[in-house]
Image: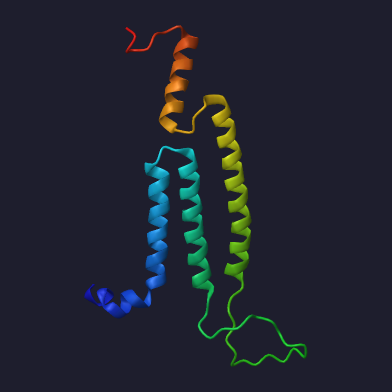
Length: 142
């Protein structure tokens, strides 16, 4: 276990520590904040950290783009980077933008209906609506 805590190990994987830090910030914002806009920002931070993690994993030191020469004579000594992680991240970015835009559109609709974007205020208003539909009184009114 001690060999994993050396400075070379930690500093050699500094990018992974940074991604973990960003992930935890995004996760904390999503869990701890009740403002819907802050939750969307937290999700975007989390998504960005995942994108950066996959891109850094796909990078090969000294690797080049996997483009074959015109004569199709491939040099076996050349190291190529895997393009699949980069392609998947491009797709994930498009999905992330679509998810963000959907979340913002839903947030606008919620704001129009409830005049707030705070979770606890929306929950209170929904509880009042439910109790009024059932013909019951709130506990504090009794």
